[in-house]
Image (cartoon, rainbow, N blue to C red; front, side, top):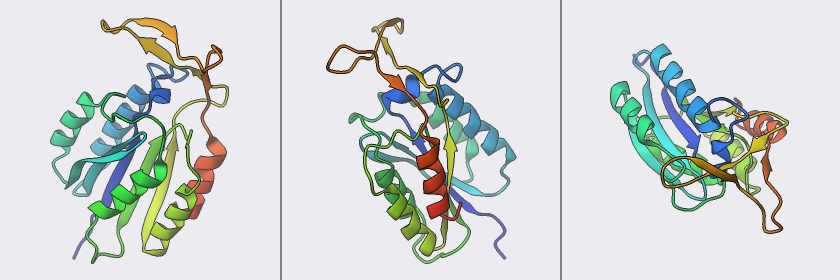
Length: 187
């Protein structure tokens, strides 16, 4: 009899995750959250998808948490070449990592600031929920937001990201979208 669950973690690695409104940064805080989650799991299979403008399976479902931690340490905002935040693609990649025959005991945890750049994520979450997969969201960031630092080759902050008009971009967590996504995914 199976007791564990299959959990796919979808981690946002877009540049907005460099914002430091959550210390040390949204991305580093997200990695710490995943490590804490892994310490609490026992026998559950966990996989990892990273996403920004595209989504990539980094680790298929496994009970080898130490390997997952190793992958986690090496992830940066440069791990995905295309920028943006496409949550739908992350959900699609996560779903394809599950066995098609098992309809229950599946969950996707989306860790993001919620700055989604497309509209279909909630529809995709509802589709997964109808197939037995629960979609949970973890919002990282603050409603007031923060700037997005730009680093030089030595890892020093040299500026803040600006829009095409030269205005400093303020990245804010989109709690409403994340709540709607979780609700649509029965999470």
